[in-house]
Image (cartoon, rainbow, N blue to C red; front, side):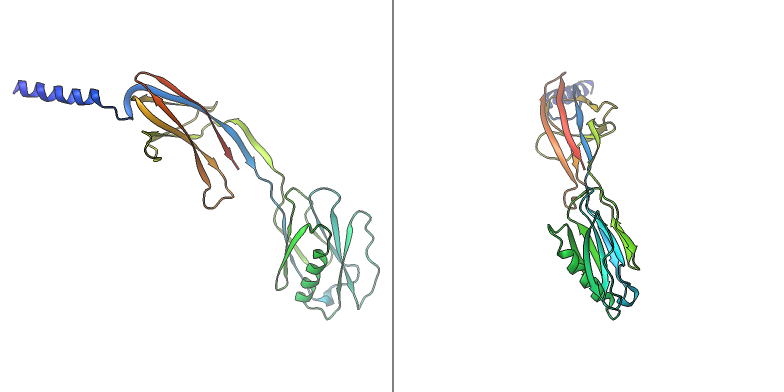
Amino acid sequence: MIKNVFIFSSIVLTLLSCSKEEGEGGKSSISGTISGSEISESRAETTLITTVPGAEIKGQDFFLINTPGTTDNYAVWFLNSNDLTLPPNFTNRTLIQVNCSNASSNITIATNIKAGLDTITGSPFTVSIDNDILTITCNTKGDLVDADNGISKLIVDVTTQGKNQIILQNGAFADEDVYIVYGDNDEIYDDNIKTNYDGTFKFNNLRKGSYKVFAYNEDKSSVSTPLTPVFISIDIGGNEEGNVGTITIEKK
C-alpha cells in the first residue's frame, strides 16, 4: 500500500514538473507601463429655433448666431412687409435678411430663415426644418458665443454646446486596467490588475511560456467599437522578470 502511494505521488510530481502550460504557479513575472493621452474631443454647436407667426414679428426684429472665432458672426433680421423699416445697425456682424408679412405662418418663417442662412458665403451652417423648428448646426467645431434671440419672439435653444479640444491627460495612466492572456492562441484574458500611481504594473507568479498583455483604447464617439485592445506579446523563461515596456493608449 505504501509502495503504491509512493508511485502515485511520483507520477503526479513528474507531470507537474513537465507542465509547460502558461499561467500561475511559477516564479516569473511580467511588468510594464501604461501611458498615453486622454482627450476631450472638439464638438460642433447645434441650435434649435422655434419660429412664430409673422404677425408676431416686427420690422428690425432679429436673432444672433455665431461661429467659432470673433469675425464670422451674423444677425438674422426680419423685413416685415406690413412694417417696413431699415435694417438694424450692426458694425461687427453680417446681416441676413428674412422677408415676411403678418400673414406668414410659422413654417413659412422657418423656410425663409433657412433660405437666408443657406445664402451665406462658405456655408458655415447646416440647416434643416421640421415643421416650424429649425436645427442649425455649425460646420466648424469649437467654442463660440451661443445664439441669442436678440429682439424677437423666436425660441432659441442651444442643444449641443460647441467646445474646443482639450487634453485632459498626457503621460502615465494611474489606476488603469491591464489584462493578461495565458498563451498566444486567443484574446480572452485570464487575469487583470490596476496600474500604480506612476502607470506601472506587474503580473507575478507566472510559469515559463508565451503571454499577451493589453490595455484598451477608448473612443466614446464610436458605437460599434468604443473599446479597442492594444496588445503586446512576450515570451518568458523560468524565474525570469519579463518587461513589455510601455503600452500606449488613447482615450477620447
